[in-house]
Image (cartoon, rainbow, N blue to C red; front, side):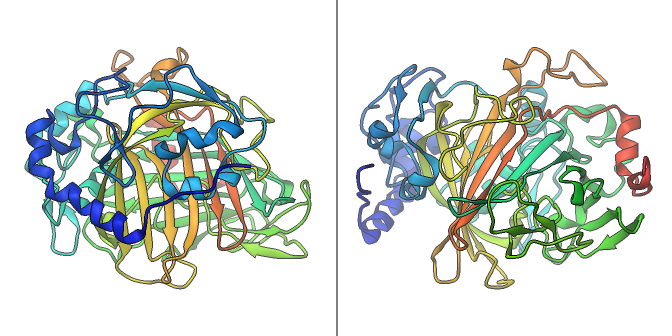
Length: 490
């Protein structure tokens, strides 16, 4: 049995959160780099102290060191270094038989020099519109961290745009598996396929090409994929295009096209409710594992006897549209997270132990990281199934997502999610940049994620161990940009 949660009163939490803003000036003076300072790599007890819960308050000395391992019965020792919602739902994310290994403290996963150079070159050029949009942005981070004042009401929005435009190489591409979980026992057959997202604009690696990929035109990025299994979803494919207008026009929706195998045709489909990366929705049978789940929504090819509709794509949180939310910085907190996991998952490892709920990555290496914690409140409520508030934990150095929580209009928790990363420099076979093999990569790839869907009693897990952030050559990118290419090979 895990020790009961001992959370401070809500009023006390809110009061202490306010201290983060009030003490901003002192923080700038005491810590080099100001309130966004990141402790030196390998420093488990930095001079400025550790940050804990409530967010931003000094944490006690670490109850662990690099190389330590923890089983379920020892988990209470780590409570102060996990987001409160993760701790509250710990039975879903941790399990009997787990072995959590403590990795390095504040390892250096910083972006390559060419990205930092773009941030410096265009510092002060990007501007926020009154509607929260971003204009005059070229490449790098739109708002260098040392220029963000935590007392400024726009600090949260500036950070949100930084997260949206964080360094991700040229995007990502690779195979994936998404498994739906319905309660403890009901599981649907996983969907397997391949997916990609290629950044076309704001490319720091393309300084000689006006920071744009060839053929980009007015596109910010293109994404898409197709399914391999199960049989009912096989060959279903799609393309998603996001224009640069999305940065200034909240009403602008993506362009979506899907290839429907049963009809042998490509159809344009509505993207009015798509905010991040699209993937076809499913009806998931509330049945035992290995029972087929039907593909719902556009191009439905089957259904299960009892079903529920999930809204997940498997890649939530990797793409956000900042101008759709009112943002606030809650502070910084030092947390443990598997940002550089060591235990392979699909497709390298076909089977794995993910705990009772199928949502756990606890048997892996977890680094100590300084997280920036952002709150976003939706400016438009699109329906009771959509969250009205979300809290996003991102790594302060890389801005890669670590944890995600969403809440409904009654402020009840809807989803709690966790992300798993993998450091490119630990992979000797990592594909190089096609136009410059000597250019450094230095990226955290999102190789897995798990969400507990509390409102419906289940969740989902995504595995994508082999994804890479370097793009294919320009000829292949041109093919990916083409809608007609969806029909090739069918």
